[in-house]
Image (cartoon, rainbow, N blue to C red; front, side, top):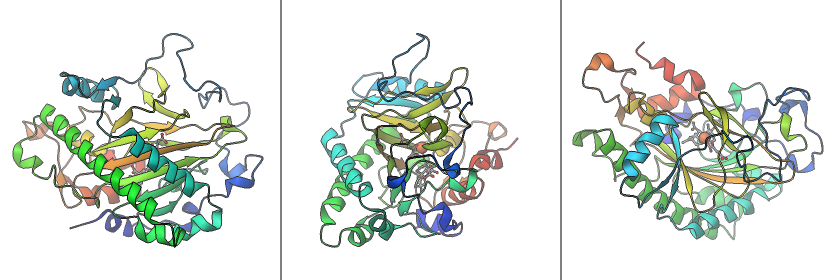
Length: 356
Ligand SMILES: C=C1C[C@]23C[C@@]1(O)CC[C@H]2[C@@]12CCC[C@@](C)(C(=O)O1)[C@H]2[C@@H]3C(=O)O
Ligand SMILES: O=C(O)CCC(=O)C(=O)O
Ligand SMILES: [Fe+2]
C-alpha cells in the first residue's frame, strides 16, 4: 500500500525550507520574515493580543457556521457550510476535549525544547514526518513565523530521538488522539458522502483507513516582535479530504470568504474546526469549496494548534461525481499522484487537473 512518505520522496525540499529559525532569541523581525512594510495599510487584518474573542467590531462580519453533531439536521447543515465556506465549527463532536488538551500539552513540551533538541527530529528533505517549516515554504518569498511537527503513522522513532527515556507519554497521547480522529473522520466522511450521493462501490474504503494515510500536524507560532509585518502560515488550502483542527485559546486562524475578505475564526476550546480539503473539492465537482486559510501571529501570546488531515487511501483514485462526464470539472487523479502535483505546484495544483 502506497504511503504519504512515498508521495513526498520524489519532491525533496532544500534544507533552508525545512530548518526553522531559532525564534527564542529574537527581539526584532528579520527581513527574511518580513512580509509587509511598516506602513502597509491593514494588510494583515491583525487582531491585537487583548482582542482574543474577535467580536464583530463593525457589526457586519460573518463567522463560520457552528454545527452541533447531535442536531438531526447536522448533515444538511454541513453541506451548506461546505458549499458556502468550505469550513465549519463542530460542537458535540464526541472527541474527548481532555485527550485533545493532552496532545496540546505534548506539543508545548516539544516546541519549548531548545532548538538543538528539536533538530534531532528534523524532517528529512524527502520525508513526510518530523520537525520543520511548513512544506509550502518554497512557494513564498519570505519565511513564516511558524514551527511544525508532522506525524504520519507512529511517532515513536522521532520521539525516541528527542526523549530517549521519556518518549512513551508522547506516543501514547498521539495514539489515543489518532484513534479518536479516525473515528470522527469516518463519521464525517459517511455524512458528507451520503450528502453527495456517492455510490456504494466508491466508498468501500471508508472505515478501513489506517494511520498511514492520515497525518497529524502540531503547529507552533512563537510570540512575534512585529506581528503586523509577519505571517504565521501563508494562505493555502489543505491537501486532504477534510482537516479537523483544534486551536487553543489564542486567535490567529483566518478563512478567506468571497465578498468579505479574511474572516477570523474565534477559538473555542470545546469545538473543532473542519476544513474541506482539495480531495473533497474534487469529488464534489467543486460544489464544496476548499477553504483558503492562513494564520496571523501575536506579539505577546504563543499560539499552538493541532490538525488532523484525513485522506483517502494513497493508492485510491478520486474523480468528480457527475451524472454526465462532460460536466466533470477535474480529471480523475490518483491520491498519491495529486500529493505529488501539489508538492511541485502548490496553488496551481487544482487548475492543473482542471478539465477547462
Ligand atoms: C497531509 C499533509 C498535509 C500537509 C502536508 C502533509 O503531508 C502533512 C503536513 C500538512 C501541512 C501542515 C501545514 C500547512 C500545509 C499546507 C503544510 O505545508 O504542511 C499542510 C500540508 C497540506 O495540506 O498540503
Ligand atoms: O494553526 C492553525 O490554526 C491552522 C493550521 C493549518 O492551517 C494547517 O495545519 O494546515
Ligand atoms: Fe491548513
